Length: 171
Ligand SMILES: CC(C)(COP(=O)(O)OP(=O)(O)OC[C@H]1O[C@@H](n2cnc3c(N)ncnc32)[C@H](O)[C@@H]1OP(=O)(O)O)[C@@H](O)C(=O)NCCC(=O)NCCS
Image 1 (tube, rainbow, N blue to C red):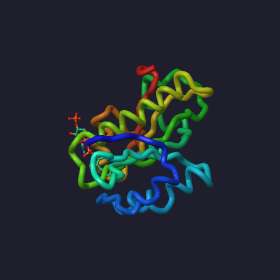
Image 2: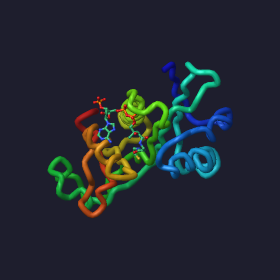
Image 3: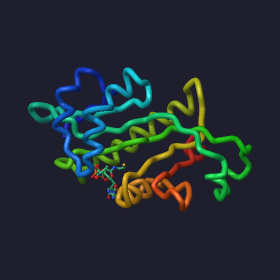
Image 4: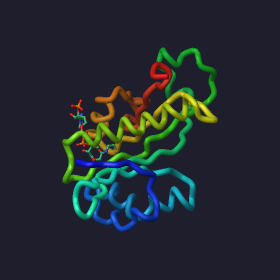
């Protein structure tokens, strides 16, 4: 695959309808909301991976980032965060991540996760703000195990789909 990653923009619109994923909500988000949420509503920014090695080029995967604030009690049992004040803990939310069914199992999911983490670390390290967590919202049990593969842990037993990675050791 010859790929490039770009923030979603108007020029990608013709590629959005062809995206295929077993979770129809992930294809629908891209088709209907991703551009609007980034450009008009300012709710989340989506990054798309374009497979430019085929003709016509295809949108092979994407992820969306936004901000999040985690209630201090939700991370209470985690020793690494024990000494933090009782305020909510700020973070970046990896709200969605998906790979087109036709290119699954070829390393693109890892590439997307690592790009999302890389952007997050860059911002936390040298951006105008800093924050402690990368939080992920897993869509189902399989997605939970995907994020666990990259070191994410469930925030609580009550909401096992919301997971997090402590950025402190990575910075
Ligand atoms: C989950 C998903 C993103 C994986 O994409 P992919 O391109 O097939 O994954 P990759 O080929 O890059 O696999 C990356 C690594 O994750 C592992 N992996 C993939 N799916 C996994 C799963 N469900 N559980 C545990 N590990 C998984 C792979 O074994 C691989 O490990 P390695 O790099 O250490 O060898 C893709 O299947 C998808 O779009 N699923 C539906 C949506 C979804 O679940 N999104 C995630 C969060 S909402």
